Image (cartoon, rainbow, N blue to C red; front, side, top):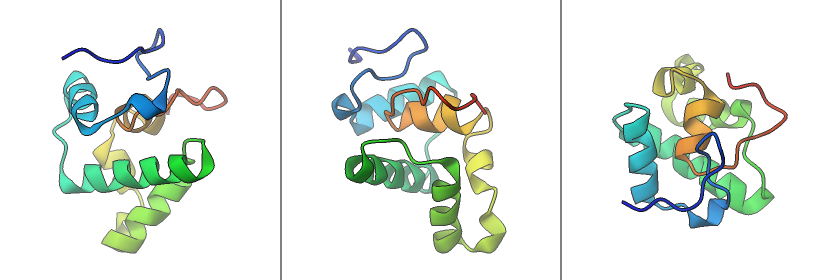
Amino acid sequence: MQLPDTDDEGYLIDPLTWNEEIAQEFARQETIQLTDDHWDAIFFMREYYAEHQVAPDVRHVMKHLAVRLGLESRNKIFELFPYGYVKQACKIAGMKRPRAWSTG
């Protein structure tokens, strides 16, 4: 598959070029098998980006998942993306790399 332009770290340069096939390829590169819970987080992130033109902070995604999965799922995002919200979730969801954030 031909990926759209990415920066030196592999994040999309233009988040509008993202699609589900690209998400699947990025997930494959991270050795993540996307489940319904992954997709739920990813689609929430995409909707947030469409509304605010910025990647959501991890706390917004955690809150979204907790509403859907229950309060005990507070850290579910870190189970879904064990190598970090920015490194994995943001990349797979097609966000630009958030420059002010750590890679955790």
